[in-house]
Length: 254
Length: 318
Ligand SMILES: Cc1cc2nc3c(=O)[nH]c(=O)nc-3n(C[C@H](O)[C@H](O)[C@H](O)COP(=O)(O)OP(=O)(O)OC[C@H]3O[C@@H](n4cnc5c(N)ncnc54)[C@H](O)[C@@H]3O)c2cc1C
Ligand SMILES: Nc1ncnc2c1ncn2[C@@H]1O[C@H](COP(=O)(O)O)[C@@H](O)[C@H]1O
Image (cartoon, rainbow over all chains, first blue to last red):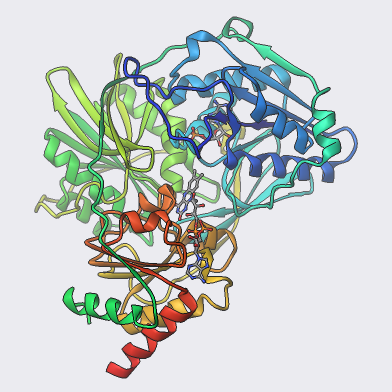
């Protein structure tokens, strides 16, 4: 089973984001981290590969400036076999459609049975890149999985719905997106971290993939939203609940 | 100006997000059609007419995940009907269809929109990024429809007194393997009490509650206040409550009179879903918790002391 996992490197969410005043794009530091959302995808891929046995492979696919590749190393250290990075100057500020075409081309070039992605990225959160990739590849998409298993050669998931969940399955080739409730991602072991240094990382350009960046989205303005005023902060010394009761009364909800 | 609004059928009627989309479409003016996916009825279609749709394209859903076929059908219709704007709400099926349609039409998706306006150069879509702290206005360039996914409650649904729309049955196109994701079972996880999205008071619990059993005090408090129960994603992922309780970027958006956040840190993905509540009250033991930055009243204390005391005080009032 050939498994491709879409992983995104993002600026550390703990550090404040900066937008380039000219292009309005997020400034991408040299050191980017693995999007936490994608650790769940990597874990699902590793579990599927472990269940499938010896000739299963897990390939990371990412479109990002190569930089220090710290985020990619993190995912390799968890146990993925190799990585394919698409890095091309023409892809700065790429919209979701362009991103998905590029990633789909890279996945198609490697060959795949299962593609795993997150439901939405922490920094971009358009939440449609995986579905776009599936459409480009002509694959079914099992989206919003809160549980994933391989059953009789098919992938079966519990798919979150607005009302509850559905049990859905499809035969490979298939794409799935996983929520952070699906699995508990493993931490890289020391051995894993050492091994990750030797694992192959291929870097491709748009020319290698035969795709061109065709951005159809332009940002016209960026403005801060006025922040909500913080109110009163009270230390609870056994009377805190009375303040809440008073406020509920004031709002006439009790 | 020609606008399409995508509607997924939930319980035999259009999802609320479609009616919100229709409100925006009416404001923009022009021709309005709904692409309706799932079990429909004359009543369901009449509601769409009342909210401004003059026609409805109806594609019933079968026993597979419907997004690939729905996107193909929409793309084909768009070829002849040439809509300028296609609106989606922020549900799971909505995102599946929007993403696939985007590829079919070769048009980008502008997600997380909180406003859409028209000027002489076309449509401007405003979305919020970085947890709702920054607003970005953008346009899609080139020819063809703008595909937009809107944030819940960005627009207010309101009937406009329109007549019965013309209903056009749409055949399900064959999309090959992409359409072969079979639905084996459907499960509903019904929440008790008032509807979270419509409730006047919401009591939400976070990971700091400690466990699924301890979460019952949140249920009890909500019951006493006639409130709906909400939760953070951390709580949903831990399996203490179903996904339908989740408030935030990837869950529901609520704007109640009172939002009572119990042991919730206030991550930006949570704040997006509740920061527009009229009054926010937070209980957290960490005085530096970001939730206090948006709270009208912040109680720094142990949720296991403050909430039981509050329950007792409310019970005493009868
Ligand atoms: C792409 C993406 C989408 C997301 N979407 C959502 C979303 O829709 N909704 C959402 O909620 N989150 C979402 N998240 C997750 C979000 O980033 C946070 O991880 C989550 O909101 C944290 O939940 P929490 O506040 O319950 O837990 P924590 O952040 O762990 O906070 C627990 C809090 O409880 C307090 N506490 C602990 N014990 C006590 C006690 N005894 N008394 C009082 N206080 C106590 C602690 O001080 C702490 O502040 C998303 C994340 C990503 C990356
Ligand atoms: N640049 C990227 N490289 C690799 N995967 C990506 C990229 N952007 C998005 N994805 C995948 O698509 C998911 C959803 O991202 P988004 O649509 O940006 O919210 C992520 O969790 C990733 O799995």
